[in-house]
Image 1 (tube, chains in turn blue, purple):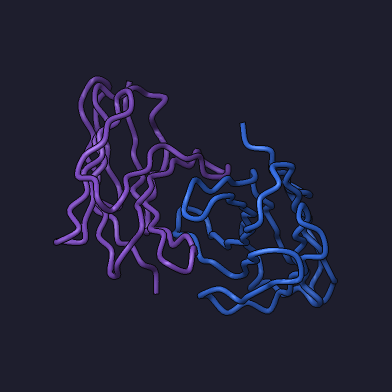
Image 2 (cartoon, rainbow over the protein chains, first blue to last red):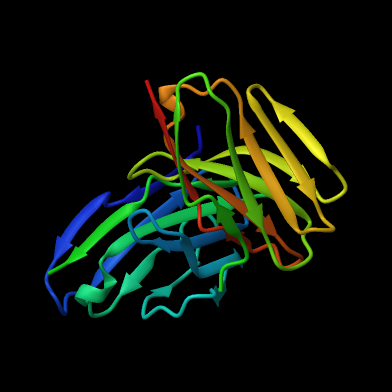
Length: 112
Length: 110
């Protein structure tokens, strides 16, 4: 079992609201990732971090932002949600370079 | 664009049959990994094959890697209804970003 946790699992919010998706891991992993995935579709890397105070944008442009103040915590924030942000957001972490990546259960976001 | 393309996009087989899915990628890799995703859940690691390996087994899973063709295949033998899921390949490059393929949706009929 992977020790990586995401909250909330499901969220419905109104357009224009600010939302933070939480992600925490207890494995001491340096590397953390956020992927966006529409139902039945491929995963798109939107943010990643190689350690504390390190964040990079991924391959898919996203209006979200991330922070990495502590090793175990990698929250994702949308300042003003729009219906186009409706999707599943998957947080993940990895330890030794190139080894297994562990995923959380995902956060399903619906913006109405 | 995504690193990996998977084929087929969807596969439906009878319980007990073998399932084969393929992954092609574009750039040099350190290793290639296969993951499984049950509907509405996160991904779970199945098997990793390094760039200097050609074949690897784990239980009912067999993975091959052909770096000259930049392709990999995942074989699930004697499939079960519980194997119904989406399967993704992921490549890891020197920047240690995990890039996932488009996925194969497998349905095993009881």
